[in-house]
Length: 375
Image 1: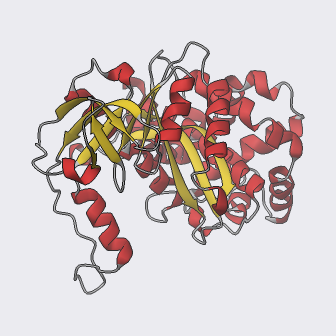
Image 2: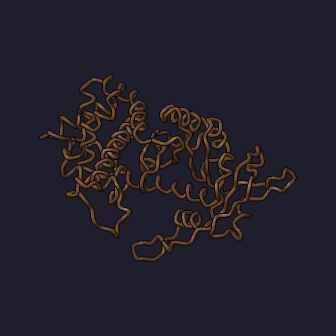
Image 3: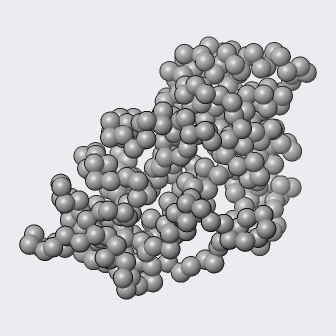
């Protein structure tokens, strides 16, 4: 089945309300993203199917990115794709911010679901830098995410240390559970109301390698919030960022990242997860790294779609490019699953030493080789 036919099957309910020219341009853009492996307007135009010249597809894609009808149908498309991805009543959903593009003018807020080593996108929003970690943006994002997910879904939301108590309260207000990391100046008090408040760094000492439960505690002195606390110390991986001369990199950013990975995990979970074992809480939070890998797949030249090269500086157009990438990733993910089936052995990758090979890169190669063979 051709990639465009896969989209027609997934998004039949959404495409039926669109102009057929917009439907055709959407399918061509997804195929161009799979073929070109670069998420820039010019690269998409160059790899557009059945186009002998660049001018026509370039103008067509340029108009499509600014098409208000397509922008209005962005969330219904995410809703239709979420219906295919979310098959459990208690899925794990990872939420995080990422700088977009490199000049830092815009920030990407993404919700993803982990699938076999990669986090597949559920919903994306692009916001100006000044709205980074805004409570109003977070609340609106959660409401839209709730509308996208199936009605019976009660996810467990994973976030890093950049999300604080207001976020946790907003997640609980929806009836969902959450797991987050505590760092910086967060204050913690044992479950007893008369206990003293201590900084989170006080819990770093003697943190065991085996996850340890600290029971129900309160966080945030100004507005105490009860949560289930777990701490653990991960084994160092021995990775060091180096310069061109192979010396260890210095500077504020490198030191900040190194310190973040050296510090033990102090994890806070909603009280609804208090019956879970500490090892299970740590395992679930370990899935959060998959969204970082997905960001690399989006931005990197070597491993991804080189989105850091885009010259687009309009938020709505950036969101449309991210929509193309989401659809292309899903099609590639299905193609990668097909490579593992018995009747698609011609695409099979028999490299056991590279089990971490991303499904989207493997699927993209399959799509480039023969798009009409996706089952």
